[in-house]
Each structure stands twice: as structure tokens, then as C-alpha cells.
Image 1 (cartoon, rainbow, N blue to C red):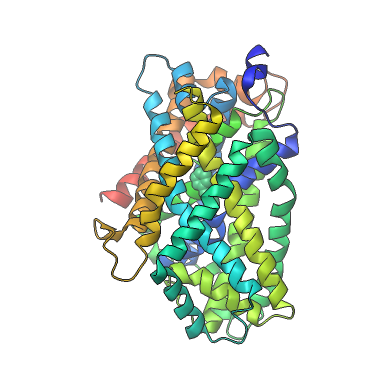
Image 2 (tube, helix red, strand yellow):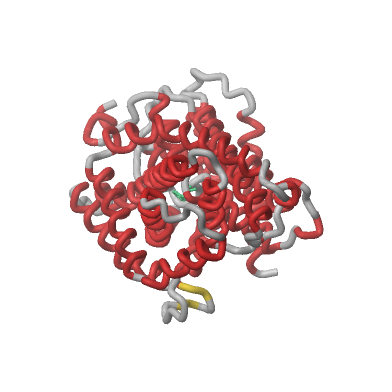
Amino acid sequence: MAEEKKNRDGFGSKIGIIAAAAGSAIGLGNIYRFPCELGNNGGAAFLLVYLAVVLFLGLPVMLSELVIGRRTQSNPVGAFKKLAPKSAWPVVGYLGVLCGFIILAFYSTVAGWTLEYIVKSVGNSFSGKDLSVIEQDFVDFHNTGWRNVMWQVVFIFLTGFVVFKGVQNGIERYSKILMPLLLVILVILGIRSVTLPGAKEGVAFLFRPDFSKITGKVLISALGQGFFSLSLGMGALITYGSYIKKNDNLTTTALSVTLSDTLIAILAGVVIFPAAFSFGVKPTAGMGLVFNTIPMIFNQMVGGYWFCIIFFVLLAIAALTSTISLLEVVVAYLSEELRLKRQTATVLACLLALLVGCFASLSLKEGTPFVLGGRTVFDAMDFVSSNIMLPLGGLLIVIFVGWKLGKSKFFDEISNEGKLKAPVKSLVFFIIRYLAPIAIAIIFYEGLFA
Ligand code: PHE
């Protein structure tokens, strides 16, 4: 196709697309944010709601995004302009670009911690320490302020560097080999965690649901976490979908990405909670839950020194493939819609993300002045983007595909113009048209207004 050739990169191989989309999905959302949300929202009950969200809402939204992206070969704003010219629909794209930008800004804060923790683990600074000392180190680190910002700068620079080089060379190469390795190390950690003394309670917390814990807040948190973890609702997968070739299978791509992302999240739960209960870290500990518990597990392992280094390196890379996709959304928009050079767009987006993002980092100091509506700037950005903008974006995307794009174009796209079977396509479309919008709208209402 002429248009495809013009100046857009594409994913070279099937494994490339799946690796890149999974690279976007798998990240701090799985290993850091998921345990925090689960711990703060009652444990196993949250896990159940989360799994339902992923299956019934995440998958359909993901497929919808991939369809929109591949059909239009455009960034999120351009995509809606092409499919619904002279309408208000491109607003969904703008919302997505803005949301991607906000997520990039605060996500890079936590991503920066992974670099700090690589350095700490290389310097063997956890070994033999008690939990209270490790916890204090974490707090002291935030209280420096500048050290957070410094790592954030480094991380955004790394992200910019990869995006600067373009889609094909940049993203594909990095994500292919390393995510399976992360899985392996999580399995090893998980085994150590469940065999620690007193781990049983943590296993029960994770897997034995107390249904009375399911509230509106739990529902919206699970919805937000589901979309966050799968990179949905803001156009990351519209953008990646736009790089997918016409003869690739969108349904199997969506299934593989969803499956691997969910597996990693559950594994992270299996790693964190048994160990946290064993060491006496509260499941509601928030930020420290993961960053303090993990070094403690390595302290109890043969070869823990090396495993710890490898783990934080892999975590940093998982975070990097996610920040790349966030930046890519903004850069695709700036370069295609505002006609900036790709390189200029990358530099500009990185600088802006830093400018905003450093307030997220600085807001974690004790007694910080950077507070918004009773939350730290970091929490406020997280809350607004994950619990409001992503569900809203997801809602509008399924409404768009279900009611505006319509059945025949949707079928066309997921069956590659009839070349693939796409056996349950009618059911999927039914979910996209009716079930998903209604369910998201109800959760949204229950979680924020009821
Ligand atoms: N899904 C990523 C993670 O779990 C974060 C992300 C959200 C990336 C939205 C892109 C878009 O770490």
C-alpha cells in the first residue's frame, strides 16, 4: 500500500508486534501498581473483579483499539479524524494523547526508582539489613527529592533515545527477549516467597475472596488498574495497531498480550503478598510494599545478590518498553498532526514530560508543598489518569466501534477482509456494542459519584 510505505514504520514480524504490545502492557503497572491496588482494595476480592474486568472489558477495548489503529494507520487523533470526519470524535484522541502524557510524567518517577534500586543492589546495600532499615532507606531516598528527579531525567532520556531512533529499530529489538526472562525470575521469586515462614496468610489474602469487600471504590480501582495494566483507553494500542500489517491477526495479538500481562500481574501478587505477610509489611503499605518487600526476599535467597540485580534491571526494561509506548503516542500525534519532525517531537515531548513529571517526584518528600485536592501531585496524576481518563477513554472507544464504526467494518478488520475465520466475532461485537459500554458506565458512576 502506498500509504503504508510512505514514511511510517511498521512492525516487521508477528512476534515483533506481540512483543512490542506486550512490552507496552507489561511494566510497573503489573509489578508495582497491581500489588499496591490489590493491597489497598481488600485482596482476593479485588483480584476477582480485576480478572473479570480484563476478560470482559479489557479484551474488547483492546481489540477495538487495534482495529481503529490498523484501519486508519494513524495516531489516535488522526484515526478518529479519518473515521469520523467533521465530528467531535477526535476529542477521544486528544484525551488519549493528554492522558499518555500525564501517565508518562508520573510513571517516569517510579521508573526512575528502578535505576536507583539497580545501583543499590549492585552496591549490595540490602544484604543483612532489617526491614525497618530498608524501609527507612526508601523514605530517605524520596526525601532527597533531587535524587528522584535525577533518575527520572535519566529514564526519560533513555525513553527518548529509543523513540528517537524510530519504531522498528527501537521498540521491537528490546522487548523480544527480555520479557520471558522477567517471567522466569518472577517464578523463582514466587517459589521463594510462598515457602517463607508465615507465607500462608499472604496466599489467603491473595486468593480467598471476601465478597463483602467489593465496593464502588474497589470496582473503579479494578477497572482503572485493568486499563492501566493493559495500556488501554488512551490510544497506545491505536498507535501500535497502526503499525501492524494488514495480514496479521488482531484477535490472537490481543489474546496473547492480555494473557501474558495478566499472568505477570498474578505472579507479582504471588511474589509480594506471601513475603509481605511473612516479613510484616502491611498490604496497604502502598509505595513501599513492592520496593521494600522484594529486596527482603532476595536477602533470604541463595544467590540473592545476583538475582536482585537482574530483577531490577529487568524491571527497568519492562518499565522502559512501557514508557516508550507512552511517548510514542505523544510523538506520533505531534509528528503526524502538527507536522513536527519526529526527532523534534521526541525532544519536545520529553522535555515537557520532565517539566511536569518532576513535580510528581518532588511531591513524595515528607511535608511537600506539591499537593492537589488533598493528594500528592503524584497521586493526583495517577488518580485522574488511571481512574478517570482511561475508563472514560475506554468507554468512548467501545461506543465508537460499536455504534459509529459498525459491525461490518469491525468484522472486515478482525477477519482481514474475510481471510481469517474469527469464530466468535458476533459475540465480541455484542460485548463491544452493549455489555462493555454499560458495564464501564455503571462502574464509573458507582466508583466516582455514588
Ligand atoms: N501498561 C503499562 C504498565 O502496566 C503502563 C501503560 C499505561 C503504558 C497506559 C501505556 C499506556 O506498566
